[in-house]
Image (cartoon, rainbow, N blue to C red; front, side, top):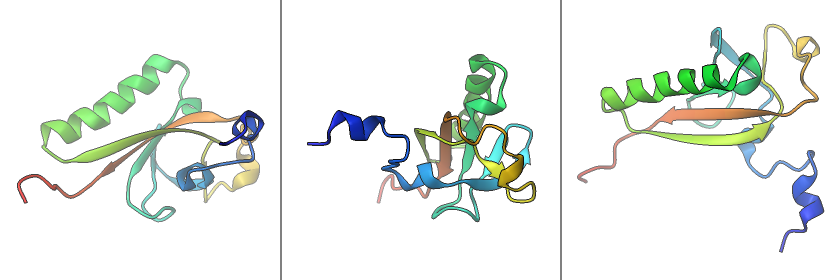
Length: 114
């Protein structure tokens, strides 16, 4: 059994996606994980928005588009350090020591009817 103090330790990241530090910003509030992670996907992080409602609206826009176009996809939510753009460098990431909520959405191949 994992001890509670290990779960609260911010240095312990159990999911590889939590350890991704940099990504390509492709829009104001949208990150691409295409070249920085195992699978291509998109990331929206709460620290990029001024309110939780804006964060949820952006995430809804992405998942609704995929659903309407019948693109199968998965979504995961993780607590992690804010992403920074590789072109900006980590030193320009003012919030790097504060955790944020990341929503990762990745399209996948359909497994229906096989």
